[in-house]
Amino acid sequence: MAKVLVAEDEERIRNIVVDYLLKDGHKCLTAEDGVDALTILKNNPVDIMILDIMMPHIDGFSVCKIAREMSNIPIIILTAKNDEVDKLKGYRFGADDYMTKPFSPKVLSAKVQALLRRAHSITLQNAVKAGKIALMPTARTVFVDGMKIELTHKEFELLYFFMINQEQVFSREQLLNRIWGYDFGGNTRTVDTHIKTLRQKLGTEGSSIVTLIRSGYKFEVKNE
Image (cartoon, rainbow, N blue to C red):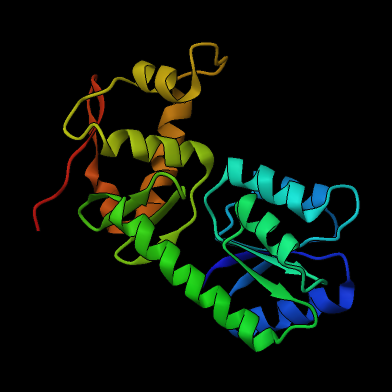
């Protein structure tokens, strides 16, 4: 199951695409113009984007270019023109594939599945692994025993920091400075709260984050 951003200003086409994706078990986020698409992409973890070229406010080419600077997610562009120039322009701005309207929703669904498999394979190769946890830094996704889990930005940053610094002890103050920054106005209880929630989301793997009385925390992989 993946989270798909469908950016398409024509409601009929948008609904058809969403219906097919939902049948495949995916979750969908929708945008009616380029501004909405970029806002959703900025504030939500998205696995793949289906992007119409002709959209209000910001066209699809511009959205594709900006999105590629923000993320490495696969992008499929939809174009009403069977124009080689448009296709080449889409690829130049970072698109992975394209479809020309009118298109087959079944073929689009198959393209989505293929790109997701490819992206998953690439990110797994670059994953940071510890125990049953696999963390993909560029995709900002985390899998526990093969199951994807949703983490907030700070939870992801905490886990990533722990996993690349295994067996090292960090005080609450050090974690606060590293993750939240030196100008953060909160206190060390923020660290405790985030680690508690992170442990819960990691399930049995959450025990890898060890509390050391009067010292702080460290990450250690349990021997199975």
